[in-house]
Length: 138
Image (cartoon, rainbow, N blue to C red; front, top):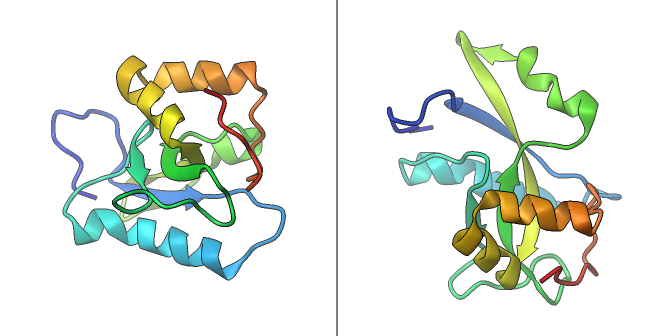
């Protein structure tokens, strides 16, 4: 990925993680599209970044309200150690958990920072497995 020089410590390679109860082709297609995004647009994805699902954003995978992607470190402890074990061409590979958000949750993050969303997740005991019926925490 094209990580800006001023961003120190961000890996130039990343793998996306998405936790679901049952893999579906639409999840795989979305992950593939998101994985190509940095290369197709000469940019990068890092922890705390958000991306709308289209313009205007469209609901994801059967949800009525989840329409934005949040990229963040995984909360699954064994997976959190993966970057310590994987390098490619002598470069550390980062792992980003793909978390669907609502527009209101994304707005909260944009206005108050990534930590505001983390606090919200903690307050609501946000599960690591995707729930298409999840309502907005805002």
